[in-house]
Image: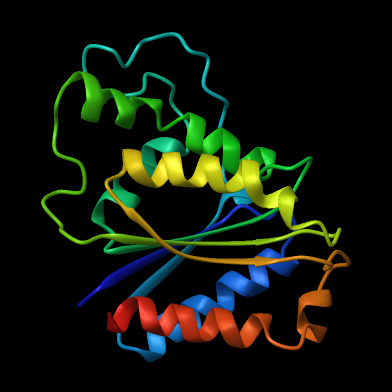
Length: 191
């Protein structure tokens, strides 16, 4: 069975990007996947201190909830990542998680280890919501997510970037976003 991991970078439960992720995971589950959702704001994740403690082993020396999280994206066939936009980038909570994956970067690029436990054709889906109508606000976030996916040997397959949605739950009033997330979630499993 295909495994889909959804990671919510939203700092608020029921926030707009969180709701998009819920819809995408529902689509994946309806298409037959095993789904799991992780809300980063519910975890204790310290930022990377650039201590280089992972340089020899590829293992982060900090002890927090990242230790539980590290294997999950490696075991996923599909990774769905969701974040609101803050100052042209992803949320601080999600950025801290991604930065802590420096040890995975070390495994891949310094230690030449295989990432993803031999799983092939792993794909990623990024969804994001921002209050202003300027589509350029997603550029920085997309670059970070593409880099993160590449480190994990995950192809940046799909994105859903929604402008003009800010108030909590306002995505429910968007004419198509939740339906698009549902469809993409299902399509990502069926492909």
